[in-house]
Image (cartoon, rainbow, N blue to C red; front, side):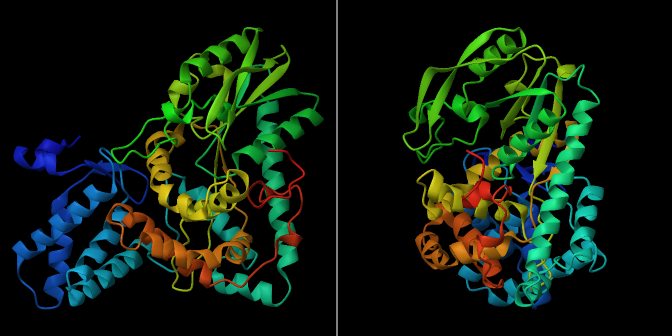
Length: 458
């Protein structure tokens, strides 16, 4: 493996707060500033430039922005670094080079895709899984903004909603069947996935199917094991980083899990998201011999979370919101943007957290996902899609008016440049959609976990 001190002279190491990046296929690679320099230089040559030192100087400015935005040892994605490079070129009045750089990115995107129908692998999800979902969207005329808007205008969206809900619930049945086939061994089902992927609702629904098959279940929500907010880790700017697994009381989690499987009664804590306070010993909880414990946690795949439990007793189930929809320029909507929209809506009504705060905090979410979730996906027993193809028009109706103000908040804050870029990108995406009222969404839909009005109690 390449080490950072092999890439840069020792005197330069301290100037880099990051030493790794996320590639497009989810793999972690060493950060190399020279690749930024080379890409800028190639773009400059296209418009008649020939100054390698200037390209290196601009690359240093990109690194400076990275140092401003990301905490020590963060792992940004290739796309995020390229976004910052584009912005740096524009801010330093290298407009022709910036245009050439944008065209260079677009050309390489076309090369990677090979043909229009080919899709991009994201966050370590197997290509076969992504392709299957994309072809479902094609078959149902919802693989693009244009086609989805056409269904909205022609009043055909109700059938798409029904079909989407049906395929989601069929997947629930499939997961439950896998568990039932191994019911003699499995004592814990771990439902893992990134923020706002639909873990909570999916966990509840799996439990419902198991109950119909006369299998008892018990749900333990590890959100209640968050430490008090003031105990959470902080970054260099003093902001709470409650996306890290260490924000959970891991020793208490493991002790309680071990005791539960040993037949003992535990007293679970309760966490209040509005106050940021945890109360200990609030609820008695016991796992009966014939019960399966269901765990819904952002960090379900993190080894330290369940290290007290033998591997053979665990069934690891992973859920991601695999949104396979292209915008009007042919770009796929980013799954993380899709989930951020879900969280913006939910946080605003459920956790008294303003949408602008959610956007500003999202870099913590992604950093934690890439560090504690994506690398472990290959260890799971099943991968599940938690995205519904009709969701984005609903978020457009709910959130679109707030984005101009969100963009204004972060536009001139160098420490939140990532939030500004993200807000602009999502605002552009939402602007392309027609509105969709949520009245057609079933009360038991996964979507209700985020927009409210569910038959389930969260």
